[in-house]
Length: 341
Image (cartoon, rainbow, N blue to C red; front, side, top):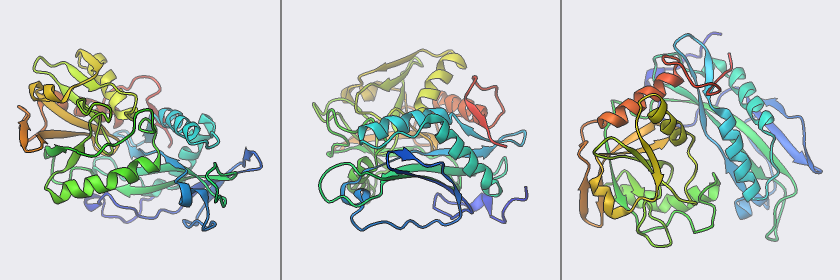
């Protein structure tokens, strides 16, 4: 298929309308068969549950061109499972896993002309989401819902190369104990907006959120999980019931163990031990790993030995290995790569 006339090398991380999106509606207790449409607009009541009570959940994944020319996505079954958990928590009817993967596949295949070529550094971002669509004025779940998948081509997260981030310890809480921190609900991200805007005003790239109960343990940022490396090359990730189960983080843990032979530990990580780590990174779909060079705790600077110039050596190996798997340069574990075309 002939690609769209897009300057792939200069794409940013912003929405650009593509030709098709997938839509399925839940009415009278069942999801309809769904299908592709070209209209990117949504019409609904001003009293729709999503507008009044934020009853919406979403996912994010990417489609890209591998070294051998195939269009693929990375572990979409895990996105389906996470969306199911999110939907259950917000009383949204579950879309079967098979339907989710089928919808992603159809949408990406229909927009194949927007999938950037191999080596461009760009990808096709895929956004599945669902929301309560009928009018609800009392505080209760909606009766009708819509599931949609749209795509948009995006550029590499690190334009001009990787630069380690400077983050701050936030005074805000990301999630309440026993709340919604472990699901991908839109309301979690709305709560983080003021904190990230304020962080940027103060000259920081991101926030480090602590556990809301004791404010002594590292949790995550507004949109990514933490990954630390000890001075003896052990990979350590925070353990908490209010952390979003990042698919990238879970994949990196397996890569660390099976490809790099590293010891991995998931445990509670206290803020006062962060100074003892050799490397730190933020794990997520957009960048895979964003290296952190400095953490500022209310004026006290914690400078990671990996520095502010480039990724630390272990973080770099993890990044190169996982992206090598995604792009087809390295053999993937069974089931990780979903071929679309």
